[in-house]
Length: 70
Image (cartoon, rainbow, N blue to C red; front, side, top):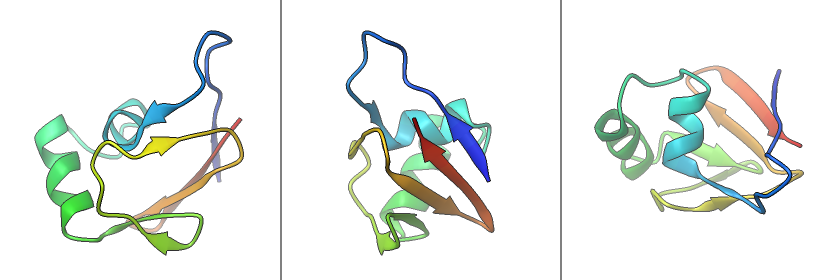
């Protein structure tokens, strides 16, 4: 499981941006498609909001990969 750490001045990161930062997708458009199709989960629940605010403690899964936000 990967770990993503928010910068000290950040309270959250948008889900589509997190997928890009983790290199799980190649572009924002690709992230939007996968999220909209219900292929991404946040805390074990399907998430279809592209700009969902992901915060410390959240767990994200996509395509057999998992990450937590610290």
